[in-house]
Image 1 (cartoon, helix red, strand yellow):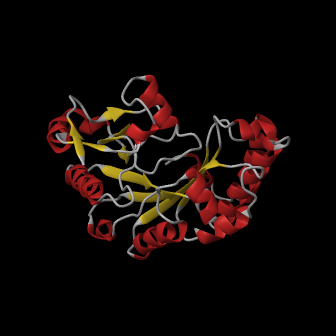
Image 2 (cartoon, one colour):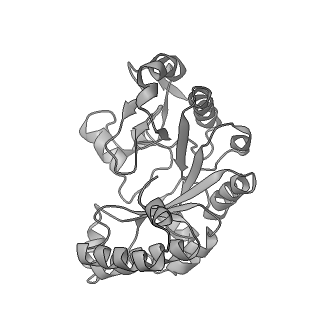
Length: 279
């Protein structure tokens, strides 16, 4: 592993379903080719030169020291801390990354701060023993291993990824899935319901469209496609009493408004309806 040092770690994020976050690794070994927005931003701001450099992650060596100093400064403002928005906290095959992530989660929990985590790697079994009201998630946009090898070439196999999440669910942890960035049928033709059923045990589903890929625009019905799938996610979550979040820009305004109206009719409790709108 390579190591770098930073002057700060914990910060408020502008991501729509985020609060505070830490990115204690630079780069990501999974090498996603959707393309990866985090890599695009890292190249734009001169943090990495190219794809080859991006997929060789660098650990922030002083991350625990920084976090220890920064927690007291921000603690009263934090609702939760997310790992991570510009890298992956549990990179497939990188035990050092996972160990650091667990250490940082434990530090935050010790100060009474909840953590959320999202990975295309495997969620370590050790997370079942970590105290705190944490929420652990995986990204899952397909069950097709050929698609994974083409677009997420160095990430964990889908079945292994789901199994690691299911293990934490069985241990009583709150679990969630990000179905984003979801590809259009001209990229991979698949049964969306199969994906939903494969993660039917989770507590929350986030759904978002694929951006920055010209193939989406070439699919003539892409707006209707994402409207239909967004509706499918919401109805699935309402039927199974799960939380949900549809990313901004995924559905058209018309479709979103119609779904909200339908959701209000479907759900009898105002509290249950509101649970679908936040983390």
